[in-house]
Length: 274
Image (cartoon, rainbow, N blue to C red; front, top):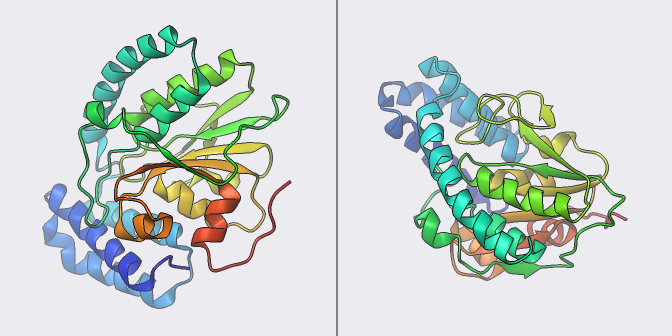
């Protein structure tokens, strides 16, 4: 289940305690640690589900359905401002898909609580050059692309990639979670074509077409599924585990073909999707 037994468990504990510190709710730390310990002992869920369920535990303890609502507003304002500048760059480059994809991958810079992660400023990070893994290619234009959005702020950069895809005659559907998870976008901030139930990764609900998924949580959900559609996964190596697995420096933007990511990160065997 875990990509790295020790480091991933430690990241879970660090992430949720960090949430409480940032939210000024350390008074519920003992109860939160009991929730985390219980889930680690049971191991009934996949790695991405454990992160979601422990975050849900935090929400219940502090009686707040969307703890990062204020931060998300600030991030969305920043993302909107940056997207105006990047739109001009894309217009000057005839909405080049390669450039739009690069911006989307590099924008995955913000995170609330990855162990050991030190983010760069978004305006600087957007110009980083992603590293590709596997057969990175878009599907045929008669295939529906399900674009799974991730963090607030960067989602406005992702919308530019989506616009570039549509200008190139691709059929693209935007997908988001119904309920809050960390700083991911929800229907309160974003209109999407598809809203998946609860706050589990939307990857778990897509069974056809082609997936473009942003962020580590969606990456981890994808590699846990046995019969998932082909995909491109856009994220940054925000932790030591991913940087070691992909053999890149920490915080490198990555564009990985889904099957390649499964082979590299999962302990299971998978057949390559057709």
